[in-house]
Length: 297
Image 1 (cartoon, one colour):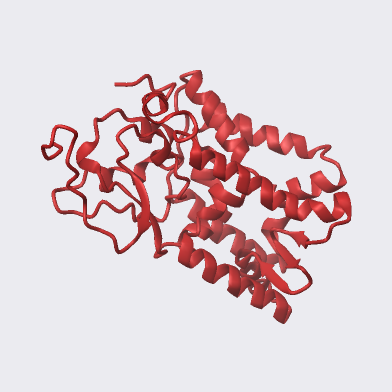
Image 2: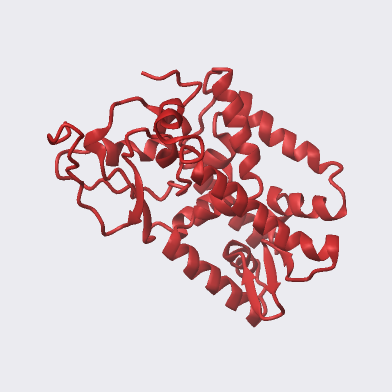
């Protein structure tokens, strides 16, 4: 079994460094791309996108609105503008099709902070610490909506780390660094994957949105698994792997849990190429033939 502090070592030897990190590189590039779109206007006067991830207008034509924001606004008793409702519908349909928690792994600028904390947590081989129930973040979604209704405000935006981070990059980080540090330390020493995996109500909301999404990760070649456990070590929601990877003969190899972020790290670090991106209806496991010409065990 591999040293859990260094998952992906066998994959890097077998596939090369780039192939063993390709989805990580693509995710970081995606996160930087979205940040650059939003910052190009305030920083350089190139107004491709105006606004933030909470609500924006692209090229003065395409409105995009966080549907969680719109839901809070409606519960607070405020009817958003037609453009905001249209933007929310566009985002809602997009994430319902591609997977709601794709937002967490491919768009959210706080994700690299959580990933860095997990990397260091793993390298230092720290205990996983306090682990709130998975339902905690769903209760937080309900609490946010309740507070919005009681106060007549879009409650989460007051403390939303993503919004705070965007404002900090434009107007100066200042105290925002404290928020970034708090998330990092919380994930490092208090609760492994604590913020994104157990608390963030935005991630929980998008998990609900994408519960029936089309794009999925599949353990399509699960018969080739050598039990190295690298996929579990890197997955931010490792509980989603077992049903697909260790399911009974004939069961679906598709990771169907809405908690899956479609980050692709399990694909990266697997030297046996067990995992692959596919669609939710591609549920038949493969029976790959090994190099000796025999069915893989």
